[in-house]
Length: 302
Ligand code: 7PJ
Image (cartoon, rainbow, N blue to C red):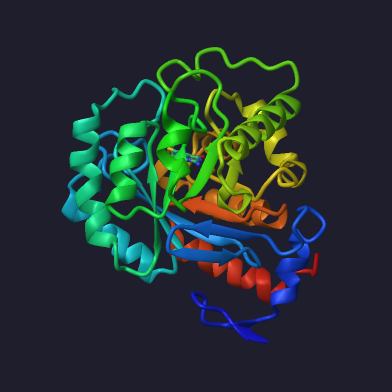
């Protein structure tokens, strides 16, 4: 029995590490994330900290840097391993934000949360923002464009930050108008493998990389469902981050508005963890951590 750092309950480490063993070339995957080297022997929880006026699920309640810092601290106290700070909304139709405006939002939050104990991720697509955030001490870059912007690979290559490479079809502004795939699972896997290969070729160590199929980013409900059912397969490429918290796919399945998707979000997070997700990106950290504790204590060995 080992004592878990964040979850404070004794649990059998082998039960979760065995879930990963058959899926990764490295039998005990690690995730290098700036100041922290995570052992991926249990699902990690990433709490969402929005510093945007228009994020779809918080309605902008964490807009000011001060409020965002307070929210981040509460998510850390609830058990978040990583905090994902976002200063530009990627929801369909959201307005673009300048580099200066994005930095004005996120830099004070990075500074305010720097010593809270969680690793700090920045959700951004812009190389200039990546550079400034890394200089300010960000541990991870979460890029919904998977480092495709000119200069993005170079902006992160020389640091030791963690990286999330996400799949998106199209651009946030128009991505939900006509998503189209011949074979969504095959195409998303091919894209994620290609972005991993590009990152490795750019000198980034494999243990810094996460992949993410990008639920809701240029996908219909049917596409999202097909990808969700294929998570175990996708997780063979690299450690997987899954973000479905409060998303419209859960609204379509349950008929619930965004403020009533907690149960759906927790159910989906547990299913993703059962399919090998290494990191769960969620709004509701306390509830997700509790659900994972129950899964670990009472679930089947994989
Ligand atoms: C995701 C994200 C996601 C990653 C957002 C929302 C919309 N980053 N940023 N994966 N979603 N890696 O919070 O629902 O699914 S913004």
